[in-house]
Structures are given as C-alpha cells and as structure tokens.
Amino acid sequence: MAKGVVLITGSNGEIGHSLVNQLAAEGRYQVVSLDLTPVPDALRAKCVASYAGNIMDRFLMDQIAAHHEIDAVFHLAALLSTRGERDPELAHQVNVEGTLNLLRVAQQQSARLGRAVKFLFPSSIAVYGLPDLATKAAAGRVKEDEWTVPVTMYGCNKLYCEHLGRYYTHYHRQLGALSSMARLDFRSLRFPGLISADTVPTGGTSDFGPEMLHAAAKGEPYSCFVGENAQIPFMAMPDAVTALTSLLDADQSKLSRVVYNVSGFSVSAKQIAEQVKKAFPKADISYKPDLVREKIVDSWPADVDDSAARSDWGFAPAFDAERAFGEYLVPRIRSRYSK
Ligand code: SER
Image 1 (cartoon, rainbow, N blue to C red):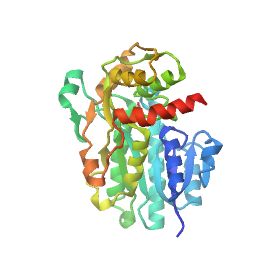
Image 2: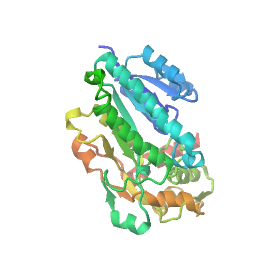
Image 3: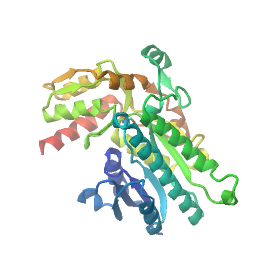
Image 4: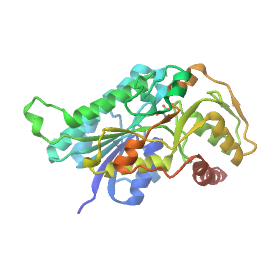
C-alpha cells in the first residue's frame, strides 16, 4: 500500500524541523513541506515535495491539494506571542486567516476523498490568562477549560482556532446539503514553552529558556527578559514531536476532547539558569526584565494539568528537567557548537 501523505506547514520552524526529521526517520509517511522560506537542502531531501509560499495564498493551497492526496495536516505555521504583539493585525491574518485557509483545504479534501483528513494543530499555553501572580499561585495546575482569557493576540488567535477546528470537525455546514459529507478530524495540543537543542525560537515569549541555554553553550552573555522567579512549564522538543505523532495515531473513539494540555516540567527562569550553569559554569546570565514580556509570562500558568492527554491517548513525556538538560539538551548542544 502507498504511504499516506502528510502536509507540514511551518516546516522551517522549530517544531517543523524536528517533525520532518522524525517522520522521515519513521518512514511511515511521505512528507510534503510548506514554509514561507525554502527549506534547507538537507530537509528537502526528506520530503516528497517542498513548497515555498504563504499559507494565506488560496491558489497555492488549492494547487498543493490538487497534487497530493493529503491524509493529515500538521499546521505549524504561526507568528508567536512577542512577534504578534509587535503587529497584532498581521498575527491575526497569519494565525487565524491562514488556519482557516488550511481548514478549508483539509475539509474539501475530506469531502473529496470520502474520509476524514486529520488536522493536527499546536495550540499553546498562551490561551490562558491569569490576572495576577496571586491567582497564578492559587490556580496551580490549570485544566483545559479554566482561565482561557488570553492577554496576547497570539493567545486569542490560538484559542479561536481551537474552536474553529472543533466547529469544522463536528458542525461544518450543519444545515446544508453537504452536511453528510466526511468532515475533517481536528486534534490539538496546548504546548508549553519548547526547548530544542537544534534550533533557537524566534518571536516567542517563552524564548528566554532556550535563549539562555544556547547563549551559554556559545560562550555568550545572556540578559534574561523576565525576572528569575518567572515560572511556566517547558517541554523538550523530542517529547513535543512524540506528542504530535502520538495524537495523530490515537484512536478517535478514545479522544474525549478536541484540545489537550501537555507539559514536561515546570521551572522558573532561575531554575533554568541553575541547570545551564551546571553544564556551563562560566555562563554569564543576568536579569533585565522587559515588564511587558514578563507580564505575558506571568499570565501563563505555572503548570498545566495534562491528565486528559495521559489517560485518553497515553501521553507520557520522557524528559523531566534533569533528564532534559542532562541527557538531551546539554550533550547535543555541546556537540553542535563544538563543530
Ligand atoms: N512559545 C510560544 C510563545 O512564546 C508559546 O506557545 O509565544
């Protein structure tokens, strides 16, 4: 049987890089990649086709759908939370209108093929908005349906797109003659801050974690844009990619929700700095909080309750903070920067 086709948007981004590599290594799918900028040759070699273009380009999306029988979409392309605050309307266009365009294509593909195209959507801890630190401390591990009052355009966009996905899966054209056609199968994860050994994120507000580590590994000083007590959950990139592919594989009948929290380990900026200094004792880390960015981090939960993901589809991250730094991040980053 021919292998199924997955379309990955934002394939040049942090998650995209790791996901293309992982899916290519597994060899279960043919990967079609799409990004604003052309993917590097090494990544392109792992794809059956690679497109450079904008997710808001309807013509391009229709062309991709016409060329490939897409079984699943990983829609990763987005403007992150800090970048989004610099240009909120652009963030809305990319994050919401772009997602709508992909949902439209996946829906049409489902109807044409007569089977549900799976649509995997990384949502974010940014959908939460806690009003102050006392409430954050009292809230503890936040559940999916609590405190969904985001304070960033990116958080608003992700929350709304979760609802769009739920709508397309269960209610799209519910009144029309097309109502009996196959609908898409939308599944979403709310990621915490992600840390990868291979890439540094751009435009996010959880970037202080990865930036601190990569700066130390390169021997550069780092001035952290949040105070040392700022705390949110993080996840090592391999766990994030495994979470996405596990949710892709999950039996639909086991899924009690459309959107799931996932978490790795909850740490403050100071605890990240301690891990970094353990590996790189000469690391020069100082704190110069940007009050707005710090406020955004403070509005995100210190941790999330991911019990639904654990019980419904067996989510079980391999990396706590010790293992993430000791067994994945530090050894891999050392070899990367020593080349
Ligand atoms: N990492 C993202 C950001 O900082 C949160 O999903 O915007």
